[in-house]
Length: 102
Image (cartoon, rainbow, N blue to C red; front, top):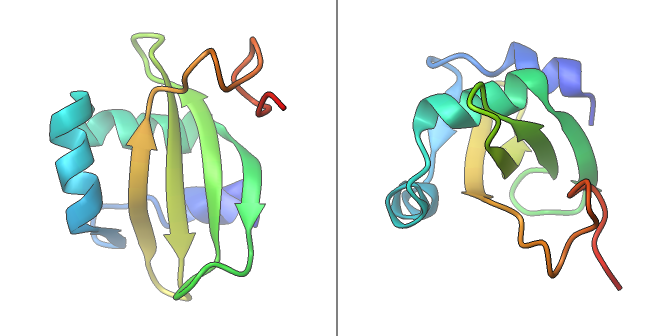
């Protein structure tokens, strides 16, 4: 996946929000605007080309308030699907939150 293509689809009329991510927004105190900030300023750190129903990827980035988030998005030909978002756990991720610890 190409982050530039993901960013082009990061428009309110092209974004689809799953019930799962709405629940996670509430549980994790994450704002929709923060998700968009991460996508627009972040980078793809993992790709899942075999995901169903659409290929997906994990985007790493920081919000304008310097909050580090991971956002999983799926991409169809016409839509960007927000799947989940979370603050990465330092126990599971490298110091820069870009690589999983083994």
